[in-house]
Length: 65
Image (tube, rainbow, N blue to C red; front, side, top):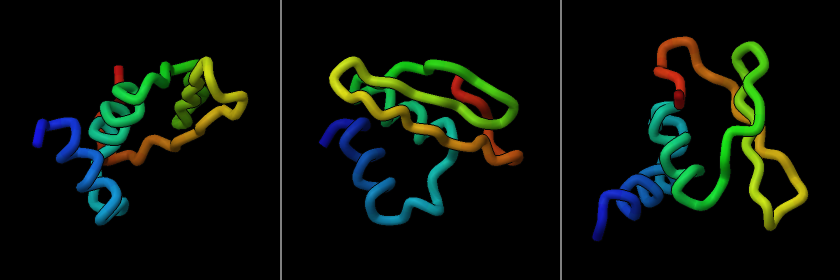
């Protein structure tokens, strides 16, 4: 199992125990890109999906960029 699969499985098993940086890595590996950052909220988009994913940055975690 590669690192990306392990991160995704960890996210699925316990989504409350994943850092924001790990969440960003998983989302970006699945083809999403950061659309905008407004305050503490990161918006991700994917060319195949019309919806925009919005995730708030938790103060204790590190940003994606």
